[in-house]
Length: 91
Image (tube, rainbow, N blue to C red):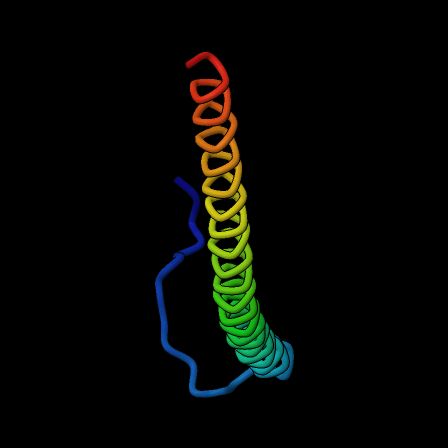
């Protein structure tokens, strides 16, 4: 151990670099939070658009299902007529 005495002390003076560093960090934090908020808003808008797209796709799928069902009913009716006609011809 040397003869110089090292001890902790409190100094009331503020260094300009400390002030500038703190301001820079604060500004960075505000910008970071702002970017997060912007991202959240973008995601909300995309979610709404996705819900609307899903609804359109569901409606289109339901309509396609109805069309196929109608076509199958027509085919079934035609087959019944064809089978009935063949059965009458055999008698």
